[in-house]
Image 1 (cartoon, rainbow, N blue to C red):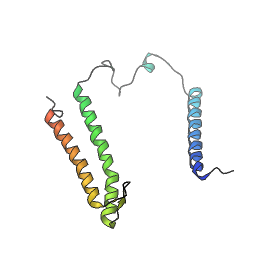
Image 2 (cartoon, rainbow, N blue to C red):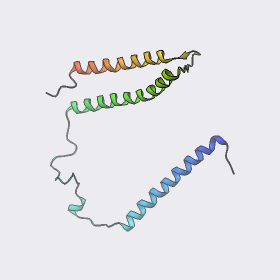
Image 3 (tube, rainbow, N blue to C red):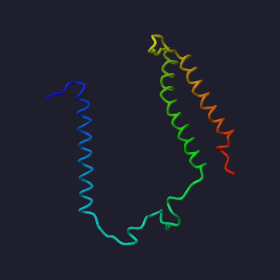
Image 4 (cartoon, rainbow, N blue to C red):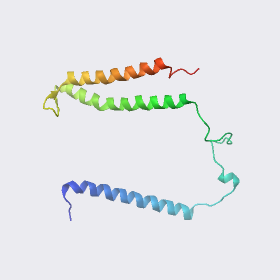
Length: 139
């Protein structure tokens, strides 16, 4: 029995997800029944790379740590956006191909380069703004 062609791919994904769930549940049940069950104060204490726990895990961190983390994620994600653009731009630049737009026009390599130039200028503006605000100073 075959489903419609558009549902065949979804059926394969559904069967794969079901098999993964069955394997996960089986492994958890097997580990619960077969694995050792020794408990004690040393066994139940948190393990921190061989070091004894010295402070509370819920302590406060300075806001600079979070700012650097957010900036890293921002620029890291935006670099990910550059990868597909680079692939399309390389194809357009080497073959002279154009990309059809929804408005009915076409985008060539000049349009793609200008678009990435605007994107990169915004990135550079954001970086310079954060630099001027002192987000990278660790006094």
